[in-house]
Image (cartoon, rainbow, N blue to C red; front, side):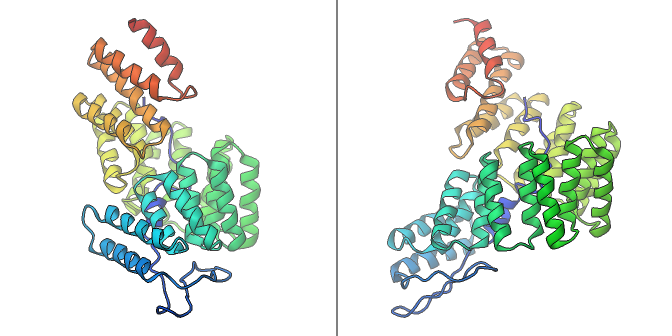
Length: 385
């Protein structure tokens, strides 16, 4: 069982990496003087704060040096030093922001949302922190909070077409199609026609079953910017809905050619390959995504499905155990991994004892609302004591 969903959000998981690159270096006055802070573009005014604690500033600079030097433990070292800085000066919002960016890049979305919230409590007009918080909420499955965060971004910068598109994508994910369309129309009035807004219009029309309208607005998006991979990803989804897999794959390939790191189209292509039983092909796509975004646990769950289908049972077991044991994994993703692991032991390895242990582990750790909960209960009854 994989997630069985296609990634067609305008706000891609790749944003987590983008936010991580928006680390704030800070611009601080000399000790004993007034303090100036580098604030997000478009901020109404800088926060008026006391001078930075010199010891906190040294920890902050040390964290930035660790990131600049790089290495396998760079993020861990930097996060520790940013936390040290905050223990010395809790008003150092630049440290809160950078901590949030690093946590988001590591997939620790709840901690990231909290850190960005601390940033905004001190500096309520910092755009990068707003975007980071919105993405953290989205990745945690809280679409309403994410949409609200993007709304704040729109209020701060009404001409931001990306914010309109991202907010509308979240409304679409929640099934609020008309609200999404109203928001996009507002974006068109304020900022004019743009590829991101046209792509999201197309995706909402597609979700409503209005395929001809979807193709029409996606054609307009292509006329604006025919180098945007999101357009071809969306056209592939339209083609799939019409049963033309060959055309869909050509669009997926076009999107990948334009941007090899565009994750959504690779994930969608992998899902199609999984459904077609091409496990090796799906595995290659999912391994490529995992290399780009190592923290994406949904990708790891799907990779395990591909490995299991390819007969690589030990590899699949290792992949799903890693997801289940990762403290940064969301509960739904951890449950997906545990259920898949139980199916592996029961239907592929055919070891009832291991299957019972895996099902018990799933039942103990999953929510009663998880999509496979009822099926797992029935399977556990069949296996007996």
